[in-house]
Amino acid sequence: MTIPSSLPLPRSLRPLGLTFAAALLLAGCGGGSAPTTFDLSAPRDFGRVGASRATLVVQEPTTVQALDSDRVIVRDSSGALSFLGGAQWADRVPKLVQARLVQTFENGGRVGSVARPGDRITPESQLLTDIRSFNIDAASGAAVVEITAKLVGDRTGDVRRARLFTARVPAAAVDGPGAAQALDRALSQVLVDIVRWAR
Image 1 (tube, rainbow, N blue to C red):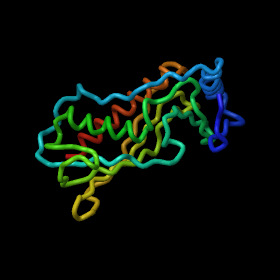
Image 2 (tube, one colour):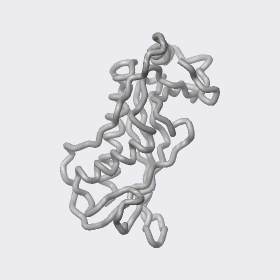
Image 3 (tube, helix red, strand yellow):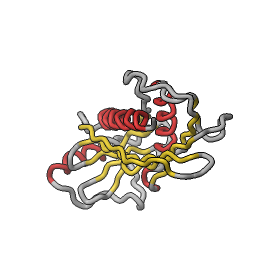
Image 4 (tube, helix red, strand yellow):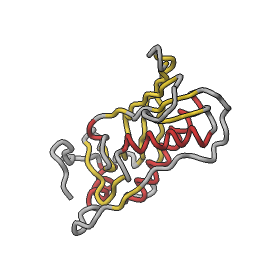
């Protein structure tokens, strides 16, 4: 497994995170086989959260360069980032989060029309988001998702509301499926919170 210089492997980890991080990294070093691809889901079973005729455009989230990829990221106690071997997402994380956020709005029946930029609607508001964290925390063995959201008037450009949404979910296993499932569950919590908040 090759780790770019921009994402160095940590030189030292706290004892609690050492076994977890080592297992994650070694999982992808088995003979150069193709990584397993994982997807993210849009929550469906949280019920309708209020009807509206408003139109909303969901912009693609911004994020730092390290998270703007299709790789599953591990963060150690010092803040150093590395890739989880043998696992990747179906698309870049910001693109996937945008798509699942749109679908969550649709599943909740929250707005009259929700779309991405370029779709043929005239929005009243735009939802701007920034992914602060989307990774496995090696020290605690948990998936961490943090996303800031801003509702902005489409014509005026004024920020109507803003909030930070966060979720932490324990990862049941240290392999690709365990990490991907935990991150998917954490994201689902955040997506539902954002949809309920954007009323």
